[in-house]
Image 1 (cartoon, rainbow, N blue to C red):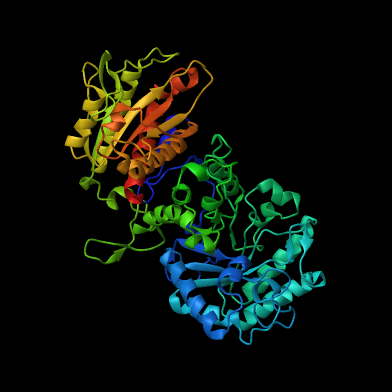
Image 2: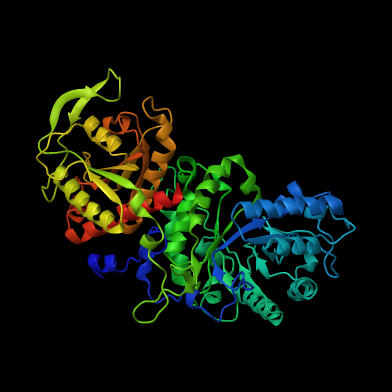
Length: 593
């Protein structure tokens, strides 16, 4: 498929969110068309985005353990209010974790981890279901079928038999109005045929009661297969599961240097494996915003990872997600991630929903061939209220005279450098940036944005401080500065975004907005173009940033000192992808801030 073909396949999907390369797999049947498949919130008249949260046995220990009936009821009322306050609509509740139960069972003893192994004198599960449904939440029974953790069976291992597991699920569905059964990823290593027999029988049991059954495997495909969790069969052969929820807990700045787009890579694997087009509610690691592992740089340098991931799920027509875990909804360390995510909820996607017309009456938006479609973002986002200032970096020629790097600064820099040029094409940077800027201007104007151009020709003399002041005087909502990179090594590739630090002496108060703008534009740009992301660089040495009094980012679109990247960025068809990425990132910023 040509680059132009790729561009034509990019769909404007709700809020002009990030369009991903995964749309190149048209053979996949997505949830919106899977009418014969029960959904996670199957009782809903309209199939809305599933926003679920896992409530683990550890959450039990912190928020519910050791309470009498009145205190338990009150505590769970608060829990459901917090879940709703986080914008979620579905609760995945741990009810069997260690070959025991949080409800009176004829098969399993009272839970040691959640109820300290004693009868509490009431039925916790019954109370939870009643409250959840009263509040409008779906509630699903989360089971570790084998009670297997950390390489060993927990509790009474003799209870971890096929017959007991099936009988235990039948017991739940017979006695409780739960909305579904959910398995986690703790599968002991067995032959795949053993796991498959169990999974198939659980599916049959759930469907006997008209309930949904899904599994949440680890996000690493190879690890699942190695222990006999036969995800390939489950997602390609009917009769095993109703939905899949892979735990993709990595960011797109994985590794200590942030060089691996691991979330996108893993998501593509799962989409490709999902031959049945099952609903896929991807597990997202909100808790990682607090853990901040050194092996995944993205959690340390960004607080918009979850927002970006949900945006990518929407762009790929995936109908929802599950957050791990409830405790993270309340953690101050996770609050910025959660708040950015909640910014996406202003215009939630609806799968198969009716769209109101101007008079408020519901009607489906149809393509000319009669097929249902979702309205483009331009109809949902009022772009006319936003002004974008675009600065095509550099000029011909540069100006080596000095100016302060910030208002009142005694530190001086050249007014505007001449820039680099393509190692392969010979095209100067100022010409490349102007070409992209003019295309971006036309794209944004067509969407309804107000656009102010710093320059529209190469023969100008505008310093970096003057460029920022033009954006200031225009009352711009964002200031986008386009550049291309250069280094001594011809092998270096990738795109970078730059913004000020939070302690910038000239405009540090704009840091949060500038950082979010940088993340939105860089993520969208790199996913649509396929150019590697080199992450966000925070600096207080850029004159054009320091003089800005509006949210600002510099986008280094790629390396002109790399022959391949130079040729790509100067190819007219590829430039359309570049513009799509930049434009979609701007859309995303306004729907997220």
